[in-house]
Length: 535
Ligand SMILES: Nc1ncnc2c1ncn2[C@@H]1O[C@H](COP(=O)(O)OP(=O)(O)OP(=O)(O)O)[C@@H](O)[C@H]1O
Image 1 (tube, protein in one colour):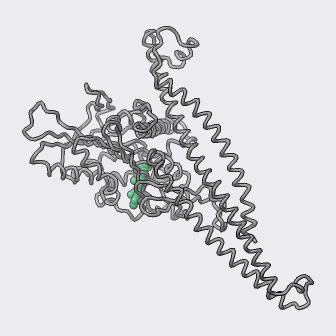
Image 2 (cartoon, protein in one colour; image 1 turned 135 degrees about the vertical axis):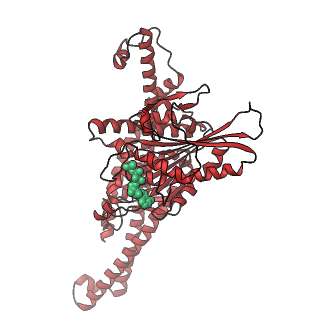
Image 3 (tube, helix red, strand yellow; image 1 turned 90 degrees about the vertical axis):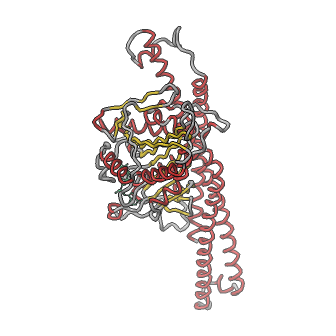
């Protein structure tokens, strides 16, 4: 059974362009595990911050900011996987995030600051060296890219497109890939840097050498007990380290032609990857999921590494800049979603922290209110003293009564403020919950739709094959109202997926209606808070 995926977040430093644009830092690391993403469209002059509905707090297994070194990131994420790989387990590390957020920096790095690839390989070699007396061990590596659903060898780019094949044990192999066996760190760094230059790249506004493909470094550790019988099984541990294509490409709807095709492929693979990770992490839970690896080359390739006795680590990347708010927000939601089961456990912690920060704000706002009201009372006092025989009402009220009156008024306002705040807090909390639920429902629906689409494709293929005609997907699907004789029986998981989609769609409609209602209530309360604030 797969263990729950670990998710870390890395926030890179502001870059020169962002500084020139005058971008503000909106992603803040709080403690070792929390990040707060502020909404730059909010009014900094609004002391009660009544519009901070889009401010988000997320908790991950680890959070790094601009102060973290390459070693810090390696030690807290990937180092823990090395021992398992040497013992014959599989593992995968992903670098996820929009273009220019530092994925290649984390994975490959530079000669002076090598990234996870080199640090992992060095530790692997050392671990193997330590067991050399009792075991025969070998390490080999290969480096490839997946671009528009085709695989290219980055260590031998002239060898054309490579195929994925399943061997007799059902294990996925890349036919014809170059495997390198070297333990020289400098040589490895040179090989990988050269390989990385072969990646399909194109400059973007955010990155001069922006990658348009997924780069996969595969490390295979083969191990057998020294003096063991030749028939004894060799233990094979596989580690995949994946530098994914910029996630924002998937969502750029204005793309045309080549860019549109690229975006569609990236979208497909990232969605399939997210779905596999989620389905695997739910497998041990109450909701058994159908894990569909065949939906993209990336997930097919990673089938063994994601399923079985494997561990998965995702390192999400964002820019801290206000100019990248939307991208950062979507990245955090995707990464947060990948945590899945653990998310549920930690959600309480999230709510607690959310409340504490809110209350701190309430207290400091109330202090401000009290100062304001005190100043008002003093002003009134001074006015009264300066105008003996002034306005009748004031002249007839003794000083102590006026003070008492102001004090009561202040208490009333304070009580009203606290009440209104608590009500709004409660509503905001349930809005956040509803938003999370709605994302979960959306992802679940997509997963089931992919299962159904996959089955429909398989069915079409089957029918076309039987008819001895070339495959014509749509036509074949539409022929015959309920399908005809000889149609393959629908698997149970597809029937389940259909039922789930219906249920999820109904659930989505309910959640959307609730969100509108709660949103209206929060909106309705805002003027009350503004009036109270002005008092
Ligand atoms: N933590 C960091 N510290 C210092 N510089 C960084 C950091 N992260 C990224 N950079 C720099 O930012 C630039 C973009 O980073 P990088 O190429 O790694 O982004 P990417 O996410 O791989 O982009 P793409 O998806 O477009 O390939 C590089 O010049 C890199 O050196």
